[in-house]
Amino acid sequence: MTETVTIENDHWRVGLLPSLGGSVGFGQVQVDGQWADVLRPAPEDISAPRLAASYPLVPWSNRIRDGKLRWAGRTYQLRANWPDGAAIHGAGWDYPWAVVEHTDTRVVLEFTSRDVYGVNWPWTFTARYAYELDGADFRWTYGLTNTDHETFPAGYGHHPYYRRSVAGSPDAVIRVDVDKAYDLVGGVPTGAAGEIRPAADFREARSLGSEPVDDVLTGRRGEHLATLSWPGAVTLDVSADAELEHAVLYIPQGRDYWAFEPVSNVSDAFNLDEAHVPGTGLFLVQPGESRSSSFTLTARAA
Image 1 (cartoon, helix red, strand yellow):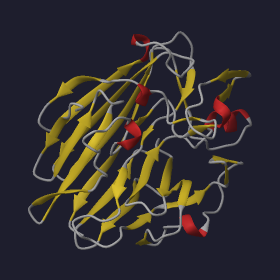
Image 2: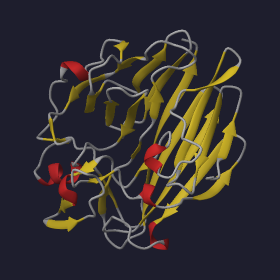
Image 3: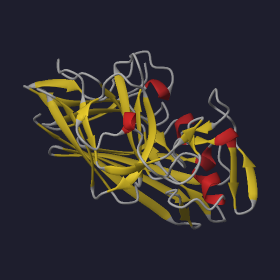
């Protein structure tokens, strides 16, 4: 059984799985005096981070088409790790992370790419992700340090899966405070952000429904990013730092879970940036420089 590191207060109980790609194993909130899973809990016999409640996306989020990272006139061939031939979800989830800090309400996990062989990224880096409970707030902080000798482009995020029903509630109801999205082919954008297609448009609160969604959203209106609600149970307000310019909304058919991912970069951001498409959300990290960004889930009664 994978070791779980737990943090807890009166509002939240969260389990981390450091040895399994630095994943989150579960996330529970108090509903009528009982702990209820809002994040999809990992199975007891979990064998891969993709089955966890969430996992870190670093040093990029989502896909790189065909694993070909084009940057500054050079092309780097990354290892494809998805059936469509893409390199997906970064390199951090492939390796165990170390616990560098642990209190009752805070855990910090770290991955140092120099310490392992075969990392799917052309440059060396250290990722440090913190998870902290403060009253009703559950704060997730992404951190990335360039340990290489040259500047590189990067992004980061997390992949939280939520349950469709919490504590016997009907289908989840969401509102997302964004005004743009991307046309996708094979899961990657064809150009700059534009109109949100109707199936992925949750600017007015509504239930998840049955139509499949796997879209990248952007055009944020402010600090508040989304409201995720389970009527009769609990509501989570999602706020995020401005650097997290994008969010991936994934609603699969016939599943009891869905995902809403606050991330910095759009899918295939490196190649889009090389083609001079604006607004990719990539950032440059100088040698020795560290970057960090946070998002927060704030629990309240539905």
